Image (tube, rainbow, N blue to C red; front, side, top):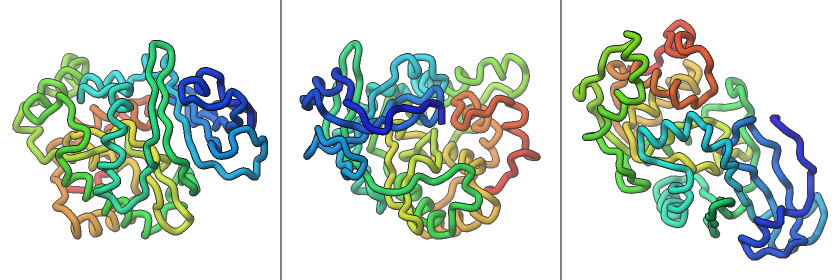
Length: 303
């Protein structure tokens, strides 16, 4: 963990005021998962806001944006370049996207409650979801059932072309990718990308897909709790990312289940391009580009 905060303490006054909560509201501030985490997360019980007890069940989560981290985040800089998606704009759309996503997945989705935005404060409020975080690394903790549920969830998302639309489109994608990879093109690492190389279906994807965005009850995937970066984009991009998240056995189970719900993309023509793109997005914190794109270090699981 990147930092340690008191288990229970008074919710910061600006958040109390923004969400019209009593200034004596007690909350649990969760440790930051990463030093550059986009949010500070607080869990609380709005029915008994002033009760200072670790036995009190939570019913609400407040996620406060850490503006300095977001402004310096290579991920959100690239999300703006590639998808015209900013974290503040995504939060503004939560009232639409949360219920819409709930309609297309079997997984639980938090109930969106409210959001606030000002020059100094951006935060969202949603229902608390019980469950266990999936530990990283996941090779021994993610079983066949979770793989099947992930495959079905993503297959349903990949068939949706309406939720979280941005200015990005298949027509503008070539120019956006070439801009993101301009330094690698200049250095001769890859060639200028042609439009026909990037042809493929678009759907609802998570360019930052990670296991820790889900909760489990120990046997099943139960909730998707991080919807910040859901956008319309090339389905193949998420499939390339999956090769970093799955073991060979998991990949076989994933594609077998996915085919029951949707036709998998062919990623061989775009794998190298999208691996470079994902490195620029810094989705998993890799520091060495050559190692990141290497088939030796990261084998090819899909066609």
